[in-house]
Length: 446
Image 1 (cartoon, rainbow, N blue to C red):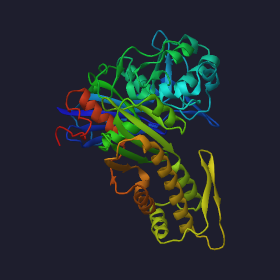
Image 2: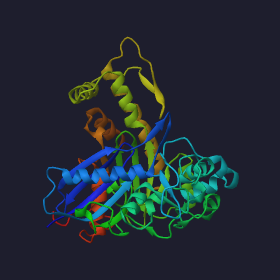
Image 3: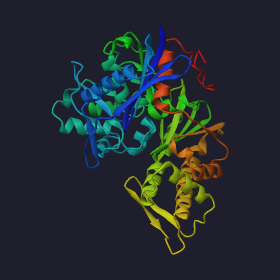
Image 4: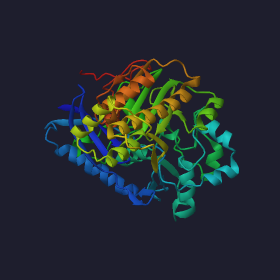
């Protein structure tokens, strides 16, 4: 029998899965689009359709060319985006759609009527707006028939684990993003529960902690230990060896996420300071540590500029980056960078595509450095820095990052979120030892 673990990453764009052997080799992979229903800026999905997608992805894994004929799955880990989640009725069924974390719908105004801004920030470690799950739950309870009957709220990864046969649990890094949890005292926060009801499961877990065995899965996966492995960015950091004390993980995908890991909890005053700049504090996937999380639209902005320049192929992208290294930025600069777009200012007769690329990368990296400086103002010295994501292959980005933050390691791990989930699955199955807070994980057969 070939023992395998499976990592599932329910992301914003795709639901991905990897089957990995205990030497750390990826034996099969599969993915399907996340089943959002979109209308302008709004995005929601049917929680049952998400489970159907997960089942399809798992079947595709079994059909992969390299799936071992004698393969047996001993652990399944699930990571996901945060803030999005599922309201569940007393019979265990979903009673409302799941709203995307970036969806503007929410009732932050209702929260503000009962809880002042600093109190909210100092307890939940998130900015008081429509992003925390509690604001979305309030909107659903007001607008969706049946939502008021909910008895439980599960984040996306927790919902998948539950529907595959596991227990309903609150994984600590995901529940830290709901606005329903006091991230200093590590208990449900009654002030927001009073607004929506007592919706959190009684058991709080950490990534890698077993929470049942798989039953509603294909035959070679039945009986596998199940674990909710936390927020996708943290699962990716774990796979890249960057979820350690004092580390900075810089994930440069469509969104850029800056993650610092430190012993917790942090003082409420520090949570308030960070939340005013929309920097979150949540519990980590490593025991007794917190993750300080800042987010930027670096990759999204670079994609917009690249498309504007008509640069599509891998070769053309590499050529643009190489020419940008020697180009003059001139007077070109960016302004009003945000989720909805940006402005390019200062284009004159001397402007060139390479100069625009250099100016754009430099400006966006500088924004990231400003945020990082703010994040680290009250932190212990950084011990190591790891960069990951598609933009680490752009030579101009690498040079600008090195100038801004100094030396760093580049992780070449593919599908890091799903791989981290697979590692935690191995821990849940008892096949891998959980590393301490200063060590990187190691596959038992490597």
